[in-house]
Length: 132
Image (cartoon, rainbow, N blue to C red):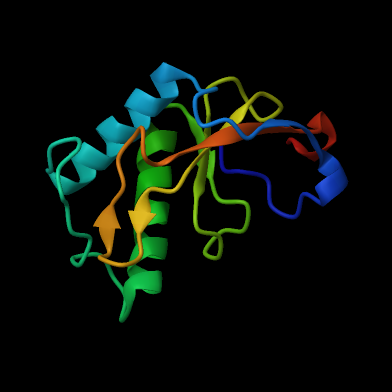
């Protein structure tokens, strides 16, 4: 399931900005998906220049889409707050109304993979009214 699009600010009902308040299972799944897609070892310097796009922003957006699709294929909820626009992915393993963990998985300066724990960005929950 992708992240529901168009959730307004009042639709976000809980959050934790702490990078250490995370789910190790989700962290590992994100790293494993990125390693599978790139063939790179977790923690290595890994270029994303093979991804489609004329510049780093476009390559990062193609990368986000690929990682999200891989995570969804493994049964995770994964997407972006604004598909094709925002600079992080959101991943959950407890359904749409559960916790969504944020990950900045692309370094636009490369573009390069950003692995966990460096990619980690807290979590949030959305109102079930926005979940299918």
